[in-house]
Image (cartoon, rainbow, N blue to C red):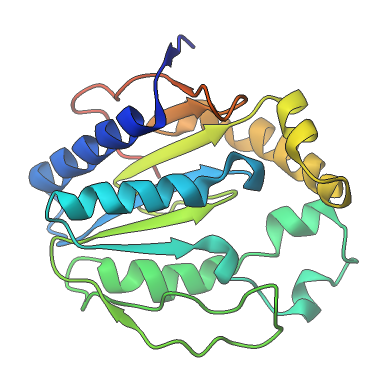
Length: 222
């Protein structure tokens, strides 16, 4: 894959333009756009999601940023096989059913746009009980976090922030390195660099590189 250097500022503007184009050219009958910013925690997908949200707001598009790590299952399910099981981290930690129901469902054609912004975080083993947020028609929902691709989520645009194996290991705290096999499995089973509409190499945080905008008319990511 050929990559070209880009600044985070320019990347954010390029992505905002892509979202705007897909919002204008959508033919699925939906009133909202759904964007993935996928990546391991050291790649800081939440930072890019926040920057992109601000850029879209400046273009007149309302946004809602959702953290996949705020849709965790209860401790009894996440830790069924121990607190440091990489397969459980990959398969069981995130409540994909709740994401479908509470985030994507309201944004389907005919939905009401009332999204639940969070469900349960790692800081407390109980529901957050947050109120639903109304995303106006024409708005953009940005979901960020790990393992977002390959789950058939109906994204209109997907961005994967990738790290080489060496960079991921170096940038992962020692007490979190038990998760590394989960990311290796994700690379093997999903191939996010090829699956995502946009791939950004983030080995050096100050020097990102990307594969350029997707071809016009390319299919949306499942």
